[in-house]
Image (cartoon, rainbow over all chains, first blue to last red; front, side):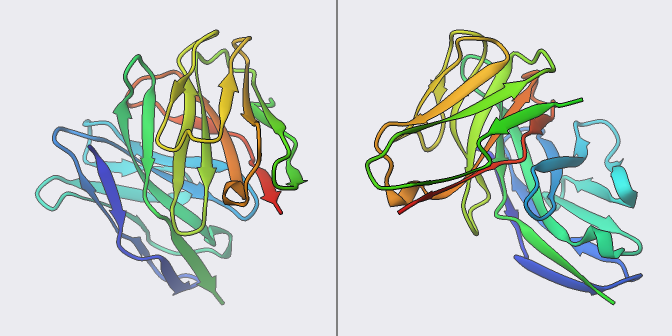
Length: 116
Length: 113
């Protein structure tokens, strides 16, 4: 079974400094990986996805992630944090369900705090 | 531009009561899902549907039932609510490919006393 591990449950940065949210995956074949963001009391929004094309994936709001097969990692980065980035971030791996459809398996989430 | 809509957004139940959560999507997606979100556990799949008239169990199906009588709607039912079912429930829909994203509703917060 595929899985993801988010290495930090909480990350705190100052506004204007870089963001790094870490995620390792476990998969027996080339995975489809995603990062979703959840703002307080809101649903989940897709930030970016990796589907075996370019290993460096660019997403919305200046975020990007690099797929590193040798390290089984898919870390999320942003060069300069903004107050509006404060949210919970989920690393997600996708698999095919029996009978069709894709199952998303979520990491436990990383709460990002951005301080002035 | 509704996307995925869940009703109700909040509900408080007493142990043993029943209720139904409704999910509606307007994107003509074949696949629909119910997840629950608990602190420190991410989201876990309860049930899903690969098309109108079909349903299947996910990771944590016990205590829940679902129905997909119309393509655009996916209902989640609790026949006899328990405190362990206190959670935030998210409905999602998608096109079903492994690389495909899911589109989520804003969640329904359920408290069982």
